[in-house]
Structure formats: C-alpha cells, structure tokens
Image (cartoon, rainbow, N blue to C red):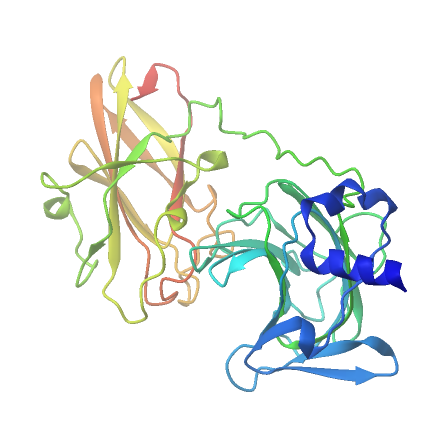
Length: 386
C-alpha cells in the first residue's frame, strides 16, 4: 500500500527524479475524479463498474469543455488513455501545457472515413493562444480510429519527438519529428466532446525514441529566404487596396525574425491573437538579395492568410489562402505549404530589396490560428541573401 501511495504521488508531481527510474516503473493510473482535475465548461466525472478509476465526459452543449490535471509537470514518457468520441467532433489531449495559451496538442478529426482520411490524427502546437493546426500539414495522418466506439491511444513523447499509436497497432499512426511548442514540461488536459477513461502515465518511458528533432532541411539550403526583419503589427481599416503607398519608408523599428525549421517565418511565435472583430493587422518584413547579374528566379511560396510581395518597390505577387471562404483554400486544403502558389521574382544586378506584407487576422479565421510564410527560390547560384 505504501509503494502504491509513493507511485501515485510521483505520478502527480512527475519530478525529474522519476524519469531516472522510469524503466522500473509500471504505468501509473491517474484517477478521473474531480479531486484530481480542474474543469471548465461541460466537463463532468462519473464512476461506473467498468471504470474503477473514474470516467470523464465532455459535452458541447455550451462553451467548449476541458479538464486539466492538477499539480502536473509531465515532460517525457508515455501517456495512454481510452476515448469514445461523440459525433463528428475534434476531441483530444494537451500535454506540456503551461497555461491555456501554450501547449502541445493531439486531436482527432472524428469521422467514418478516419482509417483512410489523411487528417484523422493531427498534432498542433499552441503558441501564445494561437492554435497552429494550419501551419504543419506534415503532422497529420490516417488512423484505425472507430467512430462512436471506445478507442485506445498511446503517446510516446521524447524531447522533440512524438509517436502516436492507435488501438494497439505495433507501428505508429503518426510520427512527429519536431514538437514545435515552447515548453518542455507542463500539465495534461483532455478536451472536446467525448468520453475519456483509463488514463495512465509512465514518466520517462520513451521506448528508445530519439529525443532530438530531425535535421532542419533548410539549414544549409540557400534557396530559402530566411533573413528577414519585421515591423510591429500595424492595424489597418482594410487590406483590400494595400500597395506601394503603404510600404513603410521611415519611422519603423525593424527587428530580426528568427526562422523556424524548414525556412518558416512563424509570426505566431511573436504575436498573440487580436480580439474578434478587430481591424486587420499587417506585419511588414524586409530582406535583401544580392545578385551577380540581372535574372529572374521562380519562387515557391506558402502563407497564411493574405500576403503581398514587392521587389525593388514593385508589386510581384499577392494572394489569399482563406480556409473558411468557399473556393478560398490553396492546396493542400488551406494549410501553409510551398504547394500554395508561386511567382517570378525579377532581380537586378547588385542589391535587391524584397518587402512582404502579411495579414494575420482575416475575417474567416478571427486571428486565432497560424500566421507566417515560407519562400524558396528554384535556384540559388549567383545569389546571396544579406
């Protein structure tokens, strides 16, 4: 009994020392009862004979409900639980959650075609209150998930990587090669319309999963434009006629923007969402490309949600990637990707000034989701970004 108590306390604190002995610790059951959780919205606990550790039910009758584990500091290890979705909702789990605005998240787009749908499972980081489901299309996958039935999920989390197993399959349905969240530890939360049961944690048990992220594919690829400086957000009454007369010429403080892996200029890391119905916010960015002669380069571009590109004070591209507007989604399905579009970039011999404006709170998305862009030229020979 004393050993069981010690293990339970360890599960609730998950201090670093627990990881050192993880290989000898069995999965620790976490009670799904009100004493252990903070709840919000329609989240209630019940006890049934089939679930001696309790069961959580979250409904969507009013505001979105969730339950966050109290006094929790989970970093690496294995999380397992059973989930029975209700209807075609998007329930899931957060981990390493520091507050409501920063966490890692896995959720399920429940539907009858989940075993074949490429977005049945989706990993998303939550950064500064922005849910970046639309920034990482590479981190979604089909899964043998059953609609309106109990399903078992196992998350193996190690450093910057995660593998997700569904219903006892030996191979992961989803592999995340780089967890993008900004916290290394935090609490665990269950959210979305579903029943949850049989939650266990095994701190430090990572099944040999390499904790280091995959190598950045853009780190030594000079085709990517990554040396940008950005302005503070600028509120505008409308972006319908944004153009040359709006480009900042003076009085602007420019700050370096550090790119994420893959050449992603992820403005979501810098700016929290704006309130609903706020005027559009635009950020201006600039970089310089040195060319050894006059030439034209084709540029693949991915972005969210509206963007304008100028080269040497001339407009060269503008586009919209609007998820909730009929016909407004760029492939792949309105997510940020170099598949979104492309344009020809004329360059002079010598120094070329490239300026970008990007709108982060278009009406269809209310400023709560991804904000950023990627640019990659077809060739880098004879060019140097300064």
